[in-house]
Image (cartoon, rainbow, N blue to C red; front, side, top):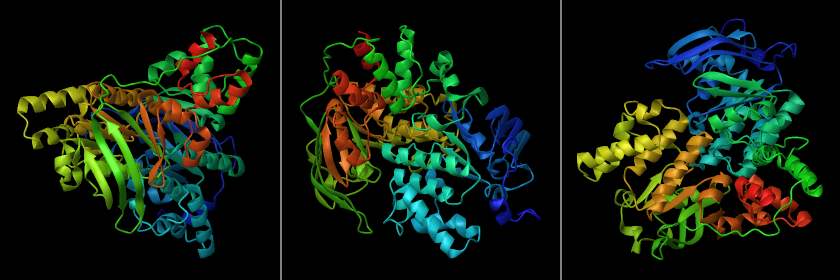
Length: 592
């Protein structure tokens, strides 16, 4: 640590004036060692104390790189070429190292497992406060605070790496927050969290901003929960800032938003679509409550005249057959530490089904996927894959039938290059070289990773790593495809790309299972949804059936798509349907 600046002093220091920027970037550019292009370039940015800023933009735009400059990981941990100047609370990042800067800036990584390293959840939460030499009573208070934020009460003694992906993410966020940094930088903080967990995180951030005037920078693709209390919205593209303004001013730039494929809240999209049809609203809504108020007004004044009826039909995959692809009968699974992850699982999938597994973090979705794939063996019950008992088959044998793309792509990688990663499965099946080459080329093209074939998969951004992991399963061309959180770290356009590839795969008659907390995509693509709760199926049905029961969903920490919640809130007052699932259907219903 630099002389004359003890860490405890930095932790307790105050920034004098609100007009004085706590973060200053001038002409900032960064090129990673071995790269030929700048990851970010020409960044001029000032952040005032107490500001809340959203950073969004396409995958690979430089968002994570920008975050790494705020606590000294760039330039002190990552190697490369830094141009320009960055100061954090008047400390030059070239001069002051990570131990000093991290006392001011708490950075939560886009891949939470990379920053969890203690033996238990309790130790993980205590680690930061202990390093600040705080009194034991204060450390205990902060650990309890973190357990509440992360919803991990009762899991204090569990290893962080035994938690589900969403629970790991919640733990990582809490471990940073209990350090009480002046600046909180959250890189994709809710990508693995269920909707209620997402709401809790942002409610806590809102509280910190209101009561403690914390400075918060949030990298986020899902804007619905963070827009209401954000002061500014910054859009990055190709390493440059292309927009920096109040959120609604940025969202009003239709050409920019459509070009970037930014996923704006449903009620905001609906408002803009109605404005295109000449229907003006007094205020552009962002939150569900604002949407209810705005659309109640135009419905009350009969500015729009909804249809008297709406014929909804549940989607049916074109190649859906009566043949059973997956069947679980009374399946249970206990982890080695005795934790019961699956208690009584019964489900049946047909060949050609497009299925969504949804539920609260830790409800058993990923465990079920690994049981189907053979990575885990059931403690009780029977699993049949195309009528054959899978208990006698090894994971490598099942992998060519049931392909599983991991939630954390780093758990899946081992090859030196992306090309080798994509080739491994087909080579293991001893396919001809020409066929292997064809599969690799087609998958790389579809996933837009052709330019990264010679790169190490570990050197890529979270979104790119996720696509490579997905591609390594797609080259196997399995009969059942399971994709665990396919949209993690992806911008909206690439999330749609992944889902469209799944759909094309499903259109050939293959069974597809996605595990996701993105209710919009589940509603759009799946014909069947299984809702998990405490290791069992709590409810199941078509998207219309499942999302038409919000009172049951809330028991599982889920919520329908925002547009569905809007129509349900106004349904009794204006006789609206409760099963509108997307903005396009809403527009068709409201305007004919």
